[in-house]
Image: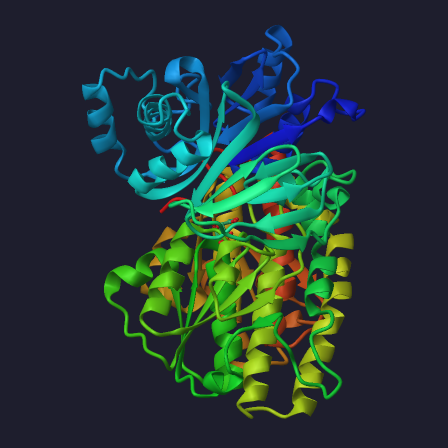
Amino acid sequence: MCGIVGYVGNASGRANATHGALDVVLEGLRRLEYRGYDSAGVAVVAEGSISSRKKSGKLSNLLDELEEHPLPGSLTGIGHTRWATHGGPTDRNAHPHLADGGKLAVIHNGIIENFAELKQELLAKGVEFASETDTEVAAALLGDIFRNKLKGGADGGLTKAMQLACQRLEGAFTLLAVHADQPDVVVAARRNSPLVVGLGEGENFLGSDVSGFIDYTRKAVELGQDQIVTITSDSVDITDFFGAPAVGKEYTVDWDPASAEKGGYASFMEKEIHDQPDAVAQTLLGRSDARGHLILDELRIDPQLLKQVDKIIVLACGTAAYAGLVAKYAIENWCRIPTEVELAHEFRYRDPIVNSKTLVVSISQSGETMDTLMAVRYAREQGALTVSICNTNGSTIPRESDAVLYTHAGPEIAVASTKAFLAQITAAYLFGLYLAQLRGNIFTGQIKDVLADLNKIPAKIQKILDSSTELRELARSMKDEKSVLFLGRHVGYPVALEGALKLKEIAYIHAEGFAAGELKHGPIALIEEGQPVFVVVPSPRGRDSLHSKVVSNIQEIRARGARTLVIAEEGDEAVRDYAEHVFYVPETPTLLMPLLTTVPLQLFALELASGKGYDVDQPRNLAKSVTVE
Ligand code: F6R
């Protein structure tokens, strides 16, 4: 939610940075645009003043504006791509916001919760505001402190002003500021919103995530909560909000810039769907030690404590929560521990029963989703153990958890999650097996069998991707549909929910997922002649009654005129008579089927939305990484 970039250095030596800081900042914004695309803006410090351009709409609008009204070359710059919270997506509300007579420029990700009170205070001092944003209030506060309290910086510079300003701010924020009086410096602060530092040679970077500077360096520094960082071309200084020095954790980014490019596909989403065999394979890699014991990436608690757990709560939002539902089936099956799945934003407001024997498993691609982060913090405060399944190294949720299992899906750029979902499910299986092994619920031999089945999944996904012509044709033919329903049972239920979510978010079609057994309790009233319904069918080799119950559900809706579009396992002939179309996936144990049955539904949504001419990577109203509550 909002992409932020900052840069100080002599970029002009680079072939792709003839305009200095501005080129680096724009390249960073191009890569971060997936975080928000309501408006974009930049500011550079040059010739003793701040120059800024901003435009509503996508980054391309800002680029057109810069063509028409170029900015001067500079060593220092900041840039922002916005997902609107306070104030609509207009030019006026776009960042940067200026203060201190135009000498200070500020960009922001998050929400300043006490902005109204601060605004009143500043209005009383005669400050004028040009936008409806909370960001402009933060900028004005910073400007007021720099100019009046610190006497134009004479009593401490922009860093000191940022410290004092942050002491007054409440809520979630990453703030970046540049000032004309300190042309070689960018100062940034973070509380509850993401910010990383990129370390270069004679240049340094700031970004909401590492993609903001991945073209220039893979050396990054994690910032902690409530910290301020001041970068120049050859220094990085970190303090807390009260000026006490702090040290960030340095790490090396393990993916290369090419993996964040489309690689010949029409969209990031299409590429990421095709990345899935690799995402699952990478997530499975290197998970056991020489004794065949499964291992986590980071474990900061005594494993004995995990043995005593008597309840598991999986916390996540959106697609990640559907991965959590799959996790529930696997964990309960293998570990025999009662497992609940809860939307993170509902969790802490219902006074949940949590204690030191509760294990909270959070699932998050970004590791920055505010709802999930706050729920994890709440659970920790109540004494729960916390494990994070996450795709983003060094992000806040894994950092604040007792143990981490990283999904190695690589960067996910398309706003609608695909490969991260399959990688989350894979990691959830691994975690279930880890726990079952630790607690002695299953033998190492059984674990090996499940791992062997899991290791066959990437090739099976590839097979589905390679044989999707009929499905794609169907999707193209259905672009004028007004509503599509999705049914599933057992682990097919979360798959149905995910299939519906994909269609909603990228094709803007009404879609709903149901547990197939729930149909007769109400939703079957929606079925009328021609209503398309996808049905996710479990393996006929699994529990007998499960398969036959779903086949009955297909018959019931077919009898009422539904167009039945069935996802079933190869060799399942029982569904043929009742299906308008059957899309087969390779054989696999029922519990692992979501790794396969999800793929046709992703392809269906992608193809249908593309057929409608929509931007599948940046669907309307959405943003990747929801860093506000
Ligand atoms: C849907 C989607 C979202 C995310 C949700 C959680 O395609 O991407 O529903 O799954 O916002 O995000 P993370 O996993 O980053 O916590």
